[in-house]
Length: 418
Figure 1 (cartoon, helix red, strand yellow):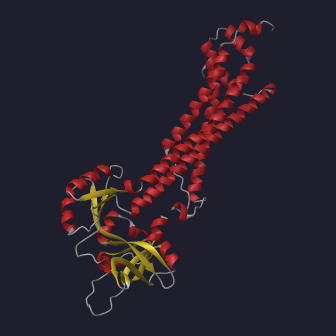
Figure 2 (cartoon, rainbow, N blue to C red):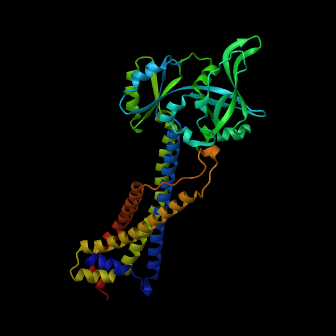
Figure 3 (tube, rainbow, N blue to C red):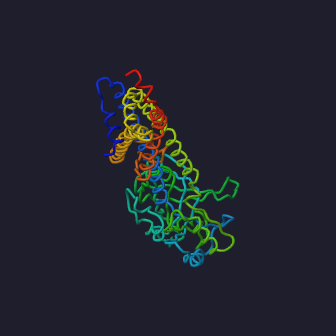
């Protein structure tokens, strides 16, 4: 063991007349530990919230949307698929039809977004069918065309979100009436297209916005409801193998599609949300770092009192040949040891608390407000390393002033009256 470290550790051991210094040292350790633990928990909360929402959004939707600039339906979308399917990093393409509708049950009603899909292709780009909590996830595959134009049309198959089912008071097998205004004014008012639909499945994505507002039907049923021509779609949806590089992939898709088309990515659609979460993480880090800063002031106080207590020892060491650098190193190591013990304890406690909170989902949330039902905690090694490095750096900086003063004591003045 180096001489400087040996002396530093020896000074940290309490003697009867050093009780106050030892108490302040213990408070310093606890302060650093509390700050580090709070930082680890806060960053894990922010990271977990972001990753959980991102996973659910990406799982419920596609990565890139291709649509016409004038928002008109894409005619003969199969030809367009052949043009863009060879774009690098594209692993799945699915057509879809989107529109706002009004959904009515026997006693209640609400607005919704109806998405017409081709189930086989939709499975390539989204995880909708793995989130079906009740009913038949393959029910949209069984929707057939109307064969007898004179007979009343059979109910269309419909998959709705869990929160929508709760709000409308319906279960699997119940009938809903789906209506959409056609934009044509008649002597009796605005013309409306309406269809009877049977709830064949209920999905639960974990995102309140989707579970309360989205409904899915087969493409033929959506075309009939929205009076769209055969072979048309509102949008082509793409799944890629590079989530972070979707902007470049979207540009390549636009180029392959030709003029008249635009693209949006999952990042574009959710940019305000993720920008806010990123800013929140930075604000949490800076705010809670103040706890570590206050603990560092305690470290400085401890060392200043230790220097006053050990003036005679410092003078004797200097007289025996210890250099200013040696004396300064002794007190710097003393502060760093306090900071290191507090940092290690805080990191271990923070990781443990996060593991318990995440595993048992102890902090519940209102899904209507936060989109997820509980607070997720995801501890990242990089975040823990950043917190520990910050705490150790602050602890080190807190040692500089008292260590410098200790190294500049004049042994002659100190020992003159001994």
